[in-house]
Length: 300
Image 1 (cartoon, rainbow, N blue to C red):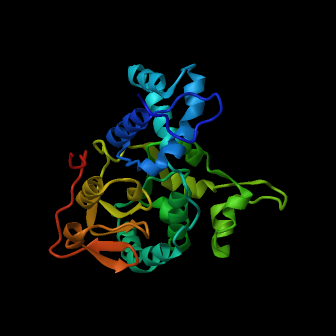
Image 2: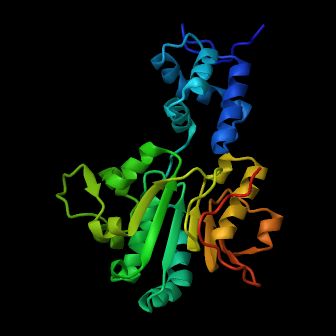
């Protein structure tokens, strides 16, 4: 007999251990996310509205409907429901200090001499991290928009990418922006405005694109800095290793990788990417050659 998991809503669709296992396998294969058994209630609460929307009698029928959907829309809806999109402006401020003080000066000089400068915000969610980077760059290099300096923001969730492209945020979300950056980042607004809009100068520096971190990466490297913070914590260790290896492959010889404060590279990758600050890393000598063109994350 199939056991129904708790908690479930009164008169809600049945949810079994087998259903949870099937969803866990799906999200691991499609997005690299690792669902612990303790996440059963979260999975139920986030997906039950989709079960009802499709008119399914239980989760087993819903899973079959997702897998049978040739359009891919239901697969995407499931992934969107189970991905976490927590972010904020200038999260982990020490990373921005390292970025501004230790990395930017040489890159500004390169740009002024006609060189190419690229940054990647991987798992960018609604765009706060990418726009924070743009603000730091413009604060140090006001003419950056006239040179080949660009930021790429990517995410697996199309919905948050649309919000990032709009660049409009509730005013309360801007409370953590350091005072010197407020006028630089946002269009002028009256004191009673409930939203703040990113200035055009910043939006011109940033492009947002869909990218699944456990699928082939059609990105142009090398990147001078990669920010991928609090994304790998939802993956198992083998998938994390493949992710870090993929970033290493597209990181410029003097580039930096910034990860979340709870994340670790592991001993092997740590021999090649050395700490240069709290959860900040740079390439260890000898320098590896850069790579350009389509990059494939190492396959599991």
